[in-house]
Length: 178
Image (tube, rainbow, N blue to C red; front, side, top):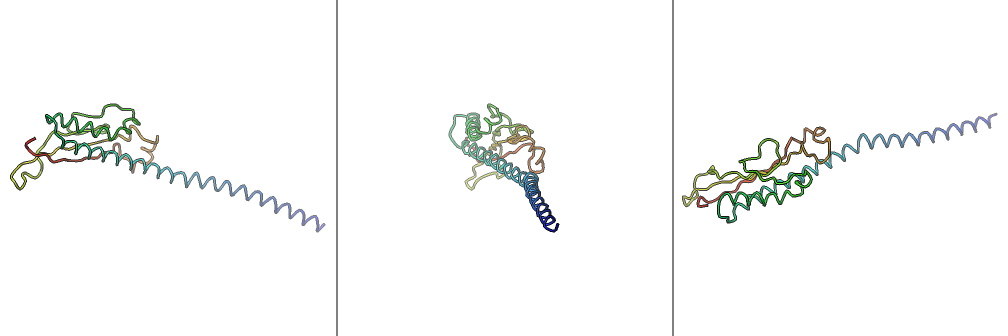
């Protein structure tokens, strides 16, 4: 009798061990789904937002530098600057499925995706040391993340990080003799 009880106790013990091993697998799955996956999603979204912002900054800077190159008219300079900036954002345009993003307005209004080159305006500082006045031109690159998110649902899920659109601006100073 005592031998049967020992065997019975041994079977119960082994049965509990098997059930415990299954419980560990379930706990691991719940921890993975509830803890690790949201962190990985947050990190992936952060990297994608960083790459978008870097692309827009590069586009605005390249567009501003292109304004310094010689063109026969100011309108030709503005168009050339927009084309150069558009080349830097080509992968974003391909992803969003949009064509020409050059806009003839002073800025990209609202939450549109695009590149805008402003008309020349008087710089806040009036003259140089030689008495020459300058004009400034602003190049703005904008991407509408709410309309074209990299990961569906992240615009609303991480709304505290992601606004409707992401933008970058660069300003170049031009001699008044343009």
